[in-house]
Length: 192
Image (cartoon, rainbow, N blue to C red):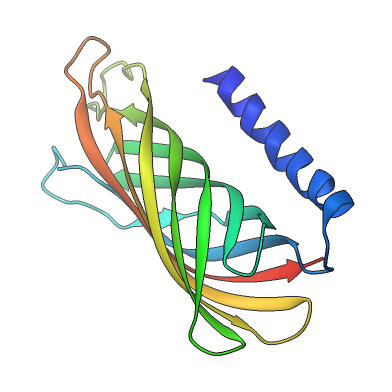
């Protein structure tokens, strides 16, 4: 997983720089940041399931033409259920298709591959030894839907929803569970 993270990180760093050198127009490369909420959907062992929050999502993209772009994104979601925790890390590489609703407003359709890592920490009693966290890695497809508004030549804002699933284990040698991962956020992007 560490090597895959490095590859995705290198792509995220190189893609915008390489794209800027080849970009036919000033707005072919973009970087965006989103804030919102996320949920790793697995059933809780405890009686109470808490809210799941999301850290910012970052995207880097290169617009191939007026409709298609290649994107790299990364996000992290941390959830706590009493003393149980689940931490999700995801890196995504995929395509984005912009369907124009007007010259400045577009519907965005995203799809691609997600490299997922879920770290699960079981609950433990007050006088018990804390069990080791169990990390499960997987590669799954993802899809996304968004609405973007280009309000200036170099700036746009968007609402985005993304869905994927990941594998998770509650014990080191336990069976894999398939868990859904959903995010909803509002973002702003700068187009070079």
